[in-house]
Image 1 (cartoon, rainbow, N blue to C red):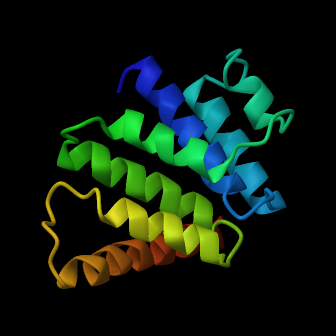
Image 2: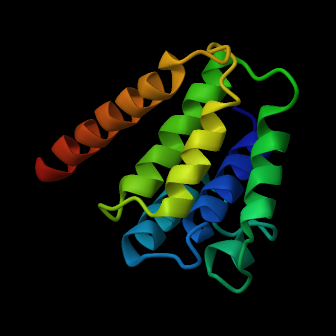
Length: 141
């Protein structure tokens, strides 16, 4: 992944953290860890967002998702986005209504799932698996 798409992904994660109106402390820790690991924590575009000098509206977050995925997202880009956002959303152990809405809107963008009934359930199963993997990983530390 190029530096601009890494930056875009971190912006989306920050936007997703703001989607319920405030950033939880667990989400904050997660965002700082991801930004540092990605090497973008001091980036002039990321820094004010990361340190909450500037809030992000849900619409901004959705616009960034659209930019990140483009018109024809690959399955890999989509999967990576879902996994990253799911890890952030579950970092505080609860899913707010706005966060659930974000996940369901993302599901509509899945390039592999044409609008079919089982699509949403498949997405939920993927997110649950990721969450359990994250919880298991945390408890082993």
